[in-house]
Length: 189
Image (cartoon, rainbow, N blue to C red):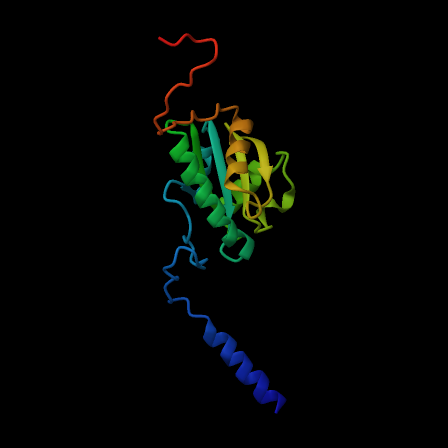
């Protein structure tokens, strides 16, 4: 009896996973798809040359992503919102957004990132945590690190970016038509 239960349980578990299944279409649902919830405005770092290009950028924000961690998958939504709001509010900004996919935990990009991070002021587990980390970088130097973007608001991410890169806040454009108020010191005609 126990053998049958284990056998059927194992078959049922294995049968639940189908790598050919398309991700859910609802944008409110967290899809477990390699590029689900990744903003199109983010540049992918997949080769050592991509990493070198990022290292010379004046201002870069890197999202450290993996496909095997629920924290990273949840952080994608927050990062997507952050990138979209930043780009909408800060046209012409020198900040470039990158996605660093460390899912495989090996290979050329893994080695290149490890060499870059060696000697930087970051905890060594940043490459293996799978927490959906964000790293703010100025010309190759790490200026700020957030271990997980899951529990921080888009507003806080934008404020952190302005503060870290000393970028002035975007001017607020008020689209409502207002009439200037008259003060007591003004003379009425």
